Length: 158
Image (cartoon, rainbow, N blue to C red; front, side, top):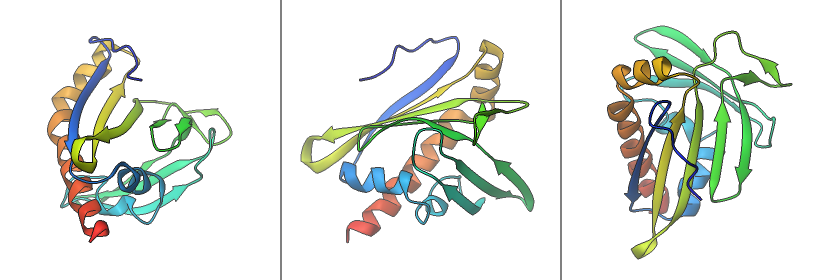
């Protein structure tokens, strides 16, 4: 199920989360959950607008050190419980974005003991954009988001 990765344009990591796959899926696909994990603390998600269908919107607004950051995009592929692909290359209605950054591919599968094997892939349009994302802290940032996701999902399970 993992797409072919191009080391020149893709960044990725895989981690086993100690929560069921359905909970991880729900966190990524239901707007009320996104603010609890989607950006490294202390930054905040202040708005979420999800239309979970291919071509539907995945829009968020971040508060980073008091600055508003609008993130608009669309879903490209949805395989319920298994795969979620979204991009900022387009906005709703397939309108091209003026300065796209990446496409995210999230993969979910069952892990031993009732957990989830979680793979996050950031696909970029150029080696330069990939390098910039890595230097911005892809592994630390997305790693933190994944840790926050797991902690939040554990709380939902209780």
